[in-house]
Amino acid sequence: MPIRRRSSSPPPPRAAPLPPAKTLPDSVKLTDNKQYGVHGEQSKPGAKQRASLFVNTSVPASADKQKYITQHSDLSPTRYSRNDDTFERHQFKKGIPDCMHNGEEFMHGRQLPVPTTSTYTLASKEKVTQKVLGESDEKNIAHSKEARRLDPNRVGVQASPTVGEAYDIVRQGPTPKGKSPYHSAPVVARDGQQTVTVEQSAGSTDGTKRNTYPTVDLYRVGHQTESFQGRYGTSEGYGKNAITVVAQPHGPESRQVPDDE
Image (cartoon, rainbow, N blue to C red; front, side):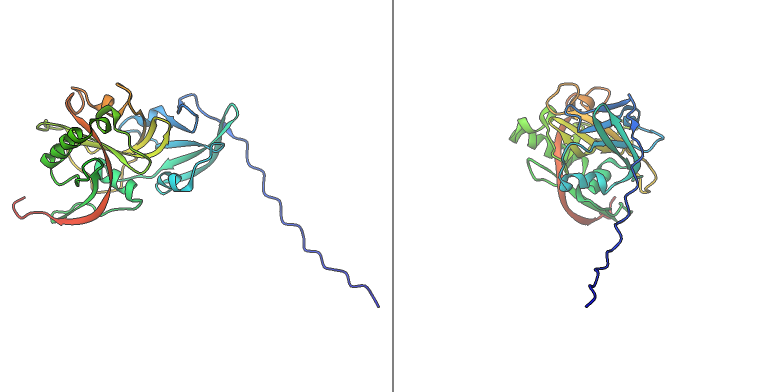
């Protein structure tokens, strides 16, 4: 009886070798534990290039935390290296030039309705008081003061948002012409006491179109000058008496614009 030979399937095709990594530019500043890198030129408002965050592939990170980066960015095919570390480059997409709306979209992980002449959306709350943010400048001020009264170690220089939360700094008096009453910055990554934010700025007028690249920046919790409070709580910024709080996702809930506005 003839011996039946087993048919052998062809071996799977070999994956194409990855192209060599480019050297990470000297202008990219790494966080303390080298988990992330931020391009200094892209932390300036009005940057013409797509804001990038460089992620160290040799440092483990949970998918749940990485989603705040990956949901809002495109992964570059180019890899980068510095010494023994290899980095992926995530380039953030255009968004709406409205700092709080931008922060709320990052926190919720999806696009939210933009304000209209008849409706607006409330989508964040202050962490200590659990009071909704964005109803009015007066209420934002009241909530920030209450948070400082209830727990002064969780506001100001010590404000410490986790990944998926945001910084909000609130001006404590009338808003000067051409200025903003607050600034919000969602945290998309964290390395120790350093937080990475992806920010939009509207100035005195909120935007409604997704036509503006965000900026990426670094802050250090607890530092007098490198914290979010230290950066913006100045006479040139939002005032030396401004209060930084931590924002969390809320709702979202839709509200009707009052007839008298």
